[in-house]
Image 1 (cartoon, rainbow, N blue to C red):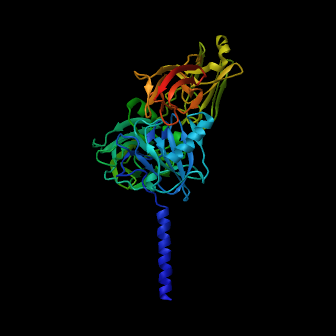
Image 2 (cartoon, rainbow, N blue to C red):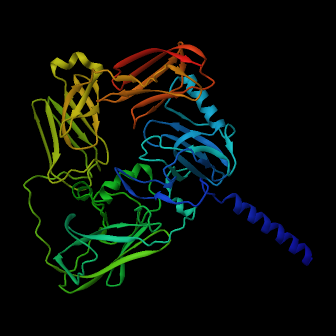
Length: 540
């Protein structure tokens, strides 16, 4: 009886170990993993949704599936994650591998077959579970620098399969972290406005200010002594020894990621080039990161006494840095009447005249502000008093099309002429140019009728062999490159576009016939202005 029990227990332990092994992620790269970036970093208009593995300035390192599963999504784009793979796993998680140089052969062949049918480079595919199964440790691609990457690395995410929310990958992969985070500066806020910035090295026995007050910090986490400045994982405020505030950067859905523009002080980043993370909530802030927060993070000391404040920041492995000081407040400051009626940031703003209309959805602003509109010389100015933060939700504007531009209906666009002229896509609708905008500014109706430029980067001989790269410099200074097609002897051939270098290219391989080939390249911008280039190639 005892022997049977022991045998059964042994079998159960083996099964438990097997299940645990099946649910354990491995690293997607070989060697000691180090990070260029971590989860929750403040990026332009979004939080970083994963971790960036350092590849030491090299491309083409093998990428390994972190667990058994199947390739459930393939996307190739000239921006964003570039060439990216999504692998769905039996445990309900999805791993993501971005900025790849190339896919492994079976995935590459599957993708290129679809590209050839559609005759496009940019593509998005959703394979079935039986199409591209992968095993843990199988090579699925190679590291690169495609898309909106600023240098060679592997962007890696883990998402919840059902919600698609990105999760902090450090919950599943342990990275060696030997350095605690560091508080660089403490920021003091009064009525949501930055009042002063205090270096922690400065001994501050007492901060004297008016109430209510709130705090922010500029801080970084260093994984290694010479590592990158990554973000913290958690921040806390203690008031007179009691926990008053806590946030944790663990899971932020993509549709909430733009709230980074209220989580971090946008003006401080733009004007002072420092990243201050606010330890309080503005009126419009739906981030789920706040685990403990009293009075939206604002503190009111009305007794005129000294109070102890301690701010603590942590990395994922609970290493920490902290700063303590005393605070004494006077009476609450009187609100300054700016003489303008403020728009409630939680409600819709609409304005319409014979020349223009504006529709700013509810919860597009982060605080109540006074909006200012004017229309002069065909230019719509839409601004706010002492506030210039990008919108949480896109604003729809319509501008009356001047009579001399009506004939360019399919070429119409808007220009943001607040500073350097920039393109805004628009469509013609009932004598108006309609567009979605993301920022305040000055806008006018414009047209794009200029074709892209194509320059052939030919070699001196005009003769090409297997392995040679044939490339073209393509430039469009306004709406940008849209669609391109390359034909060899009249047949579509796959070519790639790298927007960072303005280059369209392809490699001479077994699919390229030997002999004299007529090459034709058609390039259109986003307003369908098309250029054509033709030449003869000699392939040996």
